[in-house]
Image 1 (cartoon, one colour):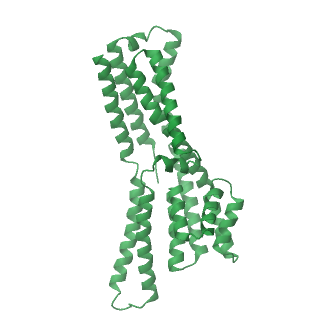
Image 2 (cartoon, rainbow, N blue to C red; image 1 turned 120 degrees about the vertical axis):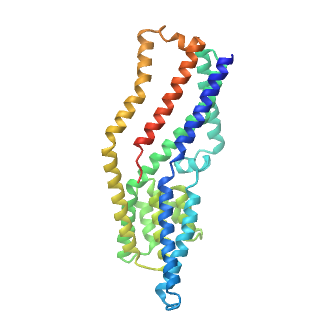
Image 3 (tube, rainbow, N blue to C red; image 1 turned 180 degrees about the horizontal axis):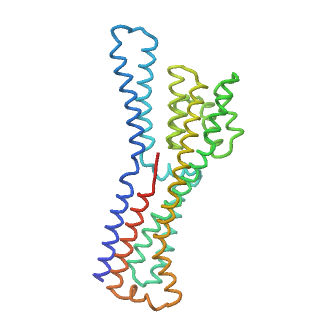
Length: 330
């Protein structure tokens, strides 16, 4: 009994450490982007202070002041939108309409089923309770995160094309709202659905700035933040919208091209990490098939349980380290 409690305690500590390790460096790209926006705001403010005595009524100086204030406000809103999302926000970002209560019911059922299966196989209530807890809280959220990332990737695939639609429409003389309506009607999901929500929010009287803020909350991507900054600054300070959006479209395509290059260069490392991570499990399954009684001491003996728990903990830590080593972000 004491050995089982020790195993559960060791697994809990290692899982906590691994979770903190996995979440520790995930926001470096966001911090770098916020630092660049802050640097732009600081330079604009310094330029404004340096020329205040000579050109206080200069339109360009007033425009720089307005742009700096807008950037600072957008930086605060973007930081709030990029905070760790709640479960309800993750469901919305994954494009699902499942109520939050139903999601928790599904999680509870999943945890109970897997916990009962583990308890029936091992005969240990601690192992069943640990499996139920991990499956009930971890597995549904993992599936939700997978659906969320897959939807974001599909969105980024068509987002640059949607911006090109706005550029061509503005150059031909169409207002911005008509261009957004064209994207709603012609673009595939999820791009069409997101712009449809912007159009519907405008129809009920919501300002464009608030529509873009909600857009960023539903799709918390750096590319959407760029789009929000361009439209907000153009509405408040003026400027050539088609040229600004054309440059943004070129930047987004270059980012996508660079991501593809990074993916190609890191494919070998990812394949090696996948093989190394799956090899112990594959060997264990094959040994269980060809020699069913060979691994029984790992599950029936206290020493075997400790060895199995330690191996699982080190395996998890190694997988997380390899994930950090091959996870490249721009």
